[in-house]
Image (cartoon, rainbow, N blue to C red; front, side, top):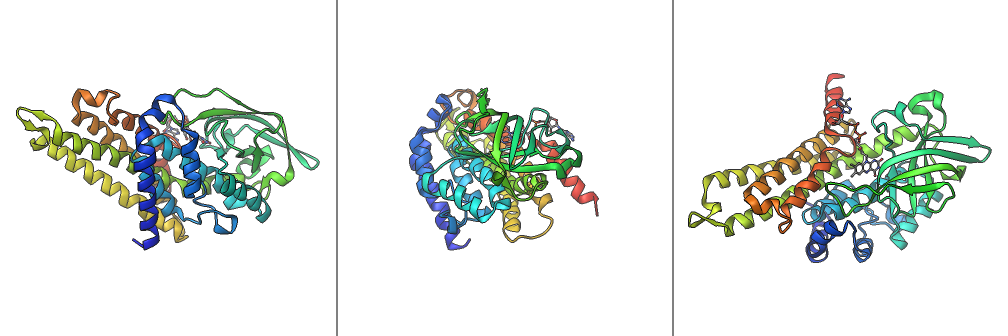
Length: 376
Ligand SMILES: Cc1cc2nc3c(=O)[nH]c(=O)nc-3n(C[C@H](O)[C@H](O)[C@H](O)COP(=O)(O)OP(=O)(O)OC[C@H]3O[C@@H](n4cnc5c(N)ncnc54)[C@H](O)[C@@H]3O)c2cc1C
């Protein structure tokens, strides 16, 4: 691994262990990330990882993004989701924004540690362009946005949102455009803070647009390019969900090993029983296999290779299934204590679950992989 990546991993690991791990259980219990942690992530450059240095960003590639997310996820899924969702909100601007939009929004993030969000999903689903109902009606030099986005990570916290809406309903996916909507714009409302199973420190809310008027300068790229932008952003970020899943699983495995060496049954540490040893070996094998897939997918995207969609989807699919299995096995190794909130593995199991679901549930990823394989 190149030196720069090793330094990023070391910095992320240090932040995770010193700043995040001590408050990880509290973040889950309080359903809130302390503001000082958000600022610490900002100072470390973790909120601007994908932003070029020309705009004051960290200038990281996808591999660096995955490394930071993996290290933070080892101790707190919710904290890693803050960094992940920030990258997601940044991507449409990176992919479609003009130099002046990048200057405006990226400088805001780099200098003020402002948060952003990616608002695609609606109650009828994100996987089909035809189901996007949020309208952006062109009115002279403005757009009037009406509609509702649901389950948006960061909820009320961002300074601006990357929003996908239909500008021309007759044109299917080519009728969708991307826009930046700033916090406080009249007609932008936030509702329904979700109560979640896991990732409880991450805010998830609905965004409602009621005659929300934005200037056409807030459109990202050309009209009709929004769906492609959203799909490209998801293709880039899926290995990062995989990295999050790898981190959560590694955290659970490390804790299970530590516990197995301490827990005495039948006069011996449970780690001396072959049944436990085989579980640990299987968990470690799965984690390593997923990690290899995730970083292979990230490296291919960083190298700008063609046809990365299959590897991106299967890395997210495999890593998230793995994380669910490994965290459940970690709970099993802790026995009854694993089910109690006194230990972190039940939180890790709850956090792992959503990696199978968000950014396109895994059935959808398998479909995506099969489409790529069968089209040849
Ligand atoms: C905590 C959390 C945070 C989120 N954050 C964001 C965010 O910041 N921005 C955003 O835009 N969205 C966000 N989402 C939305 C998320 O991306 C969607 O929930 C996810 O893509 C699944 O879509 P859905 O909920 O509509 O499920 P559905 O698509 O309705 O899926 C329901 C079930 O049907 C299956 N299914 C669907 N289609 C097929 C098919 N063709 N074949 C077989 N099975 C199928 C699915 O696999 C799943 O098991 C978030 C969701 C959660 C839970």
